[in-house]
Length: 106
Length: 118
View 1 (cartoon, rainbow over the protein chains, first blue to last red):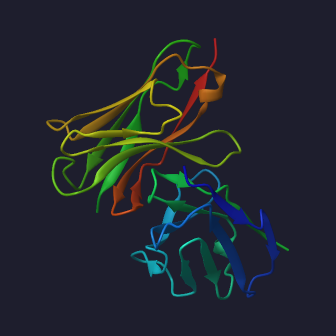
View 2: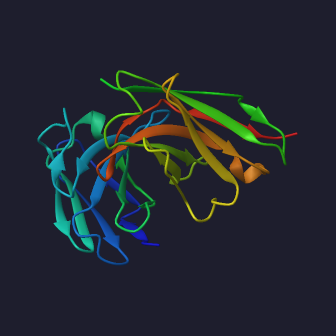
């Protein structure tokens, strides 16, 4: 099983700041990595698939990069609605999720 | 636009079987290359993939739950279902159904809370 480790666990930032979230895989997943946003009481929402492709309707301030074992989700300028928990997910070897990064208001 | 909706009992007794159904609208579960999935989230925790079923009927399960889980589909109703046997308090969670397209989940149900308690 591939383990996905997300860091940091919590990111405290102000609106307008840049957020950089990391996801590291225990072995290569090529580009088979997705990112999701989850707000309290809601289902996760797909943001990024195949490491760097924005899903339908996702604003351009969200971008994904990386391949192999190291991946990054960047939010270029945080909007109030972006404060949430973010998860990465792979499907190269079965299917696993990372533990999540909470982006909170500083 | 594909929509998914979970349904089933919100309370299950320990050692019994948890049964949930996902009703899909806006698309057929018997066509295309999608995998119809179940994912759960224990209170305050992260996401755990349970398993999925392909339109061919092939199923794939998380190895940690494989011996207790069955996912099936009813194409006539455009529904698929989850059965989790011998539940314990650790199975208390919000259960989501979702469509896996390619390697990511693009459509999700709203989730349903299932509590295991006597």
